[in-house]
Length: 349
Image (cartoon, rainbow, N blue to C red; front, side):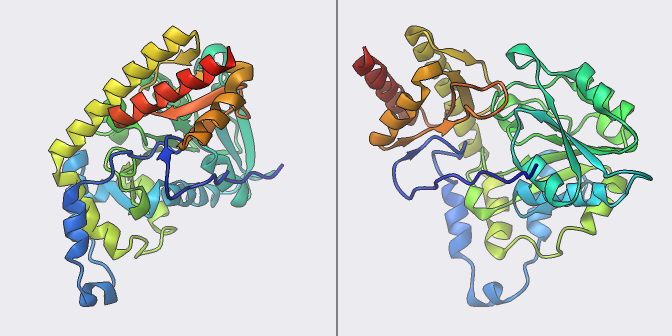
């Protein structure tokens, strides 16, 4: 089986509630920083000093514990390639992916020559700890865990992650915390990250900080964990725009706090609307909500598209038949989305 990343439409207009982007846009301070780029700085290889310092301050880590990457996607690919360089004595190396999951995990592992083992979540998307432990074997080289999960928004218990890390000392445990800004829960800054030598945490500045187009992410881990990944990631993978945008975004704490608050309010507004409509959903710790419209899902997606609103069809994901993922960002956008869903479902009646 071949795995590929599903690249969906990225329209230049309309309300984009299908890619979990920051629907408010970046901080105005980012635009000021970009305007300050000169012809000389555009011609020179970037200096990452400010970006590294700002990221370390933000995350509370030392530079030796941080690796900036060209989006978290590059971090996922780099970690995968580094982990798979250690080949088992017999057979192909294996990557464990807990599904449903972000498809970059399987795509990266497959591209790097691993056998992908998909471990399904249990009923109601319960984390399958026993099944993951049962999948670990001498060929296991990397295990992907997303917390909060995408597309469900469910946070994985810290104890489950540490149990898996202890059970697979020969594997890299990649914990994707792309949505941790909204959950407020992270392994970064905990003793476990230093104590468990096979843990690496992935973060992105695309979601809460509105830098998706800048392509800037980060890996956090013990120096020994990051060392083989540093050998894989190119030395100048962030362009100058990302290098100057990141410190500006991180220093605008008021903007960050405001947007996280908008997400929180938007999630509750969407919960209330789905309750009124009798639509099943899963409470989320991310900036999105997974809702099961069942056999009405395609009607909802099409109906909102006709109104200029994009939602993400997740019905092909494991356990997600009839499910739609809806980004919950700016409150005004969420209200517009709710009105449109109600129109479509009421027209059906």
